[in-house]
Image (cartoon, rainbow, N blue to C red; front, side, top):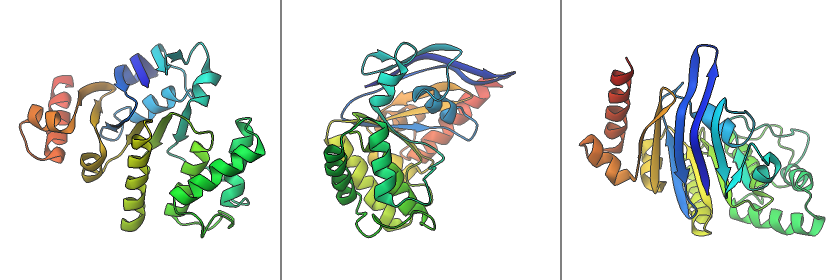
Length: 244
């Protein structure tokens, strides 16, 4: 489980996070939504300890990231906005390298890696160098690399960005599999159809603040519309109006 409590982060006069608080629970997919510049990426970076908050607390499975950031990192699998593969390595080599960084033994790495290769349908690219990969192939490799240490909490920043229809469907099935295994899945997306199809709960951020935190049906009811995209637009519009 992931808990964010009153997170604040400013860059000069810009408040990227202005009291962000929400909980992402085990066995659920939590969607993190917001317009560009809303503070989503800053929030995620504070969550996976790449950035320190000015104030507030990040808890992962009850562990305070400020007290024991290494223990928190071990419990997180992170697909960041920048995929950052090693282009001269094959998919398997990229995955194995991260397993070694986590201190895993070779037998465990091999077993876990092959399970991910099967789950993500990567057999045809597993022994190819990642240089020249398509966007979908890069994302698959980056996700497998992020999950090699079998974390209970998965943070995915726009995992289907740039994927074709078939790759998107496969990725959605994989996210459902993670949820079915009882993991905590937190992902950001701009695709409302995807959010509606996957999320048990949706957190909406605008101007560095959480302006909605509810199940999809409750979010639509709150906005007075049957369409999730319309609900998002109305909630963001109301938040922008209140902040003006």
